[in-house]
Length: 240
Image (cartoon, rainbow, N blue to C red):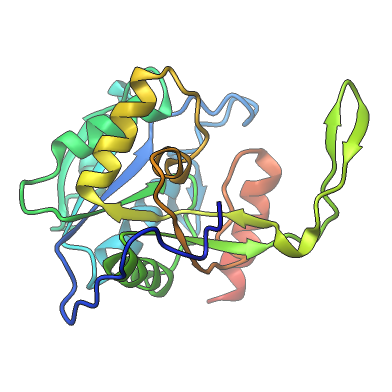
């Protein structure tokens, strides 16, 4: 599927639709060596606070729901008390898809566009968020991505089977933004099919919709390991 094209006419809207954000921070951080990455200090504050603030600062976002572990609901609620766009902090599910659905359920009926973001991407700027929301407002589905620099191999049993053309490969980031009804329908279908997906774009693509790719940001890394956290701290220091 060509992700740079849409399967229906682009919606040329002069006004941004009402957009709600779901920030997913309900993982177990199994690769963090015992560090709770959601609350890990980054730039003098818990990482999740920095993640949420970017959405608070983005005019294209009207409300925010944070999805997290049950034991972090109260701490994160406290961190977000000065962020008036945060309308709910809710418990996540047994996997990412379920957590996203729970977050969507907590958004208000006014939401027409839903932005889904990894809580472990604390360096997403409000400018990046705005860029993706505006693309989704036109195309119905959008995500940031950066071109792949390394050569990628398809491997089976430690044997290389093929080498895709690097020019056509992109590393997709979040936030990923969608027409609310399209995303809800796509996630419901994925759940019914017991499909195991690693991002929300995949759910939408399975339904025959295309996703508009916009320019991502190399600094918008996902903190998965202790090394990632150190890199994020260095990147943050560069912007001060």
